[in-house]
Amino acid sequence: MKHEHMASRRDVLQRVALACTAMASPALWAATAKRIPVEVWKDSTCGCCKDWVTHMEDNGFAVTVHDTGNSAVRARLGIPSRLGSCHTALVEGYALEGHVPAADVRRLLQQKPQALGLAVPGMPVGSPGMDGPQYGSRKDPYEVLLITRNLMTRDISTQTFTSYR
Ligand SMILES: [Cu+2]
Image 1 (spheres, rainbow, N blue to C red):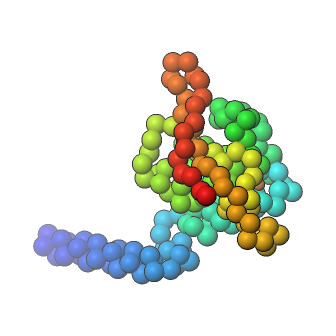
Image 2: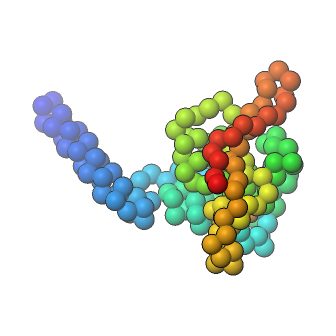
């Protein structure tokens, strides 16, 4: 019994040490931490979608890609097309529309608000995946929106989750 207790304590210490090492380097962090699965629906020809997938993978998400386009999935998830972008994703029951930064996805998963998910409508230059060399260092202001649905009326509303400017 006592021995078991010591072993589990050592496990905990090892895990803490691992977490500390991981925090020092994003790449190491991604390799050691448990990857959060994300499913993405996009067009096979969408380059900026691919770049967003890479951004998510670089930040510790395990991405499964479906090259089926995203309009049907977006509609099924209840996201209005006025909030639409080039790809739609699903993570732990939340919808992600467009070029949502990984940091916002992490905050969403930590805070777990009662919401449909997050959206970055359109394709703002400077957002993750829209920040390649072809855009130079251009960064347009944009907002990450939290999408909520009224349970009674089913009406969709949005509020600013993060403002990038
Ligand atoms: Cu895009």
